[in-house]
Length: 282
Length: 324
Image: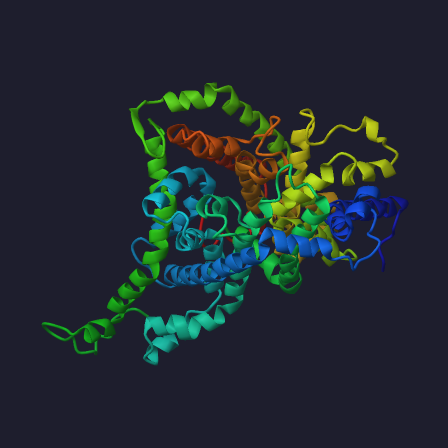
């Protein structure tokens, strides 16, 4: 028995689809126009409408120019290197902490949980002034080690995601392993860590994207821009009146965005789940 | 699982480490310590220690290299009396207004996409993807987008709006903040939507059926089933958007050339105070004020939402586990 549809229902349905189409269009328009611009020659860009597709999709000069002038290649190496080291450290630390917080009752357990929750309310950017001073006292400004330590720092979202995942792993696993003569280290590294993989992948993707896109700290803490160029700081050099060739800038924007697009398409589900798990129970 | 087996012989006197470690209780202590020490150390080093120093420094007139002595509350007075600092609160209001629109849109799309709709994955992806793009890249995308006669003006031209009647989106001080706020809505709306739809999906589907039997229409379903069950996420997002509206950084910094033409947000001004003017004490006072504002907003939020959802059935709320 189907539900009767009145004209009003059809009208509401129409409005729903219209709103979805308009909004998706608005979300994609800035990106798509950027893609169009990136494939245009200088003259073509000047003469044609900014929302018209390029004459030829094989005009790659803008990409080549950007790649050669910006030093983005070095930026990729630094950013990806920093990203890999940082996500490994931070996910390891996060899952170790989540393990002890979830599996053991000890004095200080609640205190640590609250300390992390409270920390998530204080915006990290607010403390930049004092952190900068501390880092420069420790000689960690203009050093990749310093930047990595800072980015690995405290990642409350990962800890939430991992804690939640631990709650769903039965403790019977730990207990039987202990009876078999396993140490608690063994339980964590040999039994639980392999099971934790999906949650770890989610954390790594979220954290990885964050680090790849990071600009503020990279700019502040890696001041020798020749030596330590990240993707963001390399792109940033195109700001300013001297370089306002949008067709080249757009090519640069695409080069920087492409890896993220690939990651997004491959790991869509993990990204959505990660976002939700990190926030719902927080 | 942690009790010592009473049958196990308790060694007397000096124990080797191996024997000591074989006692589960001791082993647990070691594991707890070794696994927690580094994360907790990093938390203290990058959050609590700088936080304390920030409060301390806010009472001093100092730069990164020199300390010119204790000045009491003078820095705090400056935050509220210096025009260029106070003006940034007004800019933040634009971002807060944007956040309201953003959350409303996100809630709307999360709701309609949670019912069966064609191309859900495409719409969701199109709205969410901007969140993953590099902030500097977004800056350039919108610089291009808003430039006179470029993408936005051309698109509006298709709808018959002549170029002459359009303002300079980034230069005209009557619209430039709205232009920047729009980029922030563009970036974060999809992310909020994904958070909300995750929460909506965790709603027990039998509740919808029960509501439908009781004669509830879509609006009732939204008001009495969906809204109460996502109140936690909603509260969290409102708080985050207030934080975000004060600490918005990339849009004014990249698109509007470091907050020129009256687009500087509170955070941009704080950054300039510390790293350009080297007034570290004043910047710290600004940071303390920022944290206080966030705390106050959080409290008000909690109270309002407690009031708004006081009648909501508690059984529809997801069980609170873990942190908080």
